Amino acid sequence: MTELHQATAAGDPDQVEAILRENKCNPNQRDMDWSCKTALHWAAARGHTETVRILIEHGARPCLRTEHGWTPAHFAAEFGRLGVLRLLHSLHAPIDKEDCCGDKPLRIAEIYGHQDCVRFLKKAETECQAYRKMAAQKGNFIDDTDEEWEEQRKDL
View 1 (tube, one colour):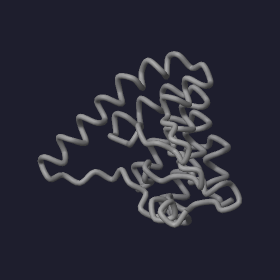
View 2 (view 1 turned 30 degrees about the horizontal axis):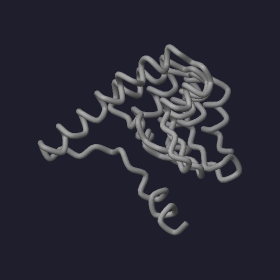
View 3 (view 1 turned 60 degrees about the vertical axis):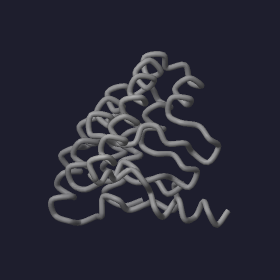
View 4 (view 1 turned 180 degrees about the horizontal axis):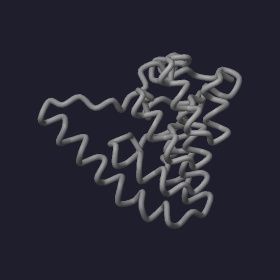
């Protein structure tokens, strides 16, 4: 676990920002001992909305996945972190991707009984798909695919 992962999991946004400003850690580094989680996965799971914002401002990619295909949105949905889901959605992060079992964050929120997240994600999924379609029509790039995970998935 990197210094950035530790500061993120501990919920210390000032330390996270200091580490990123000093370029001590790559915000997209995956922790191989923890299912390939990035610092953003930890922040989303813990509900550290401010840390999520800081990480993304410093280049963290919300489309990156764990070894099981979970995005930060999956973790936010699992733990009922509505504020994190709202922030991810407002930043056009992919909140509707399927994991290796075919479950989207919406399904994860349903499983864990987070009804406020379920209501939000039903609406947000539709908006996310519409935004993706509009961006494609305009020729705008959206960073919503974890190429490394997709390649590994093909190999399986």
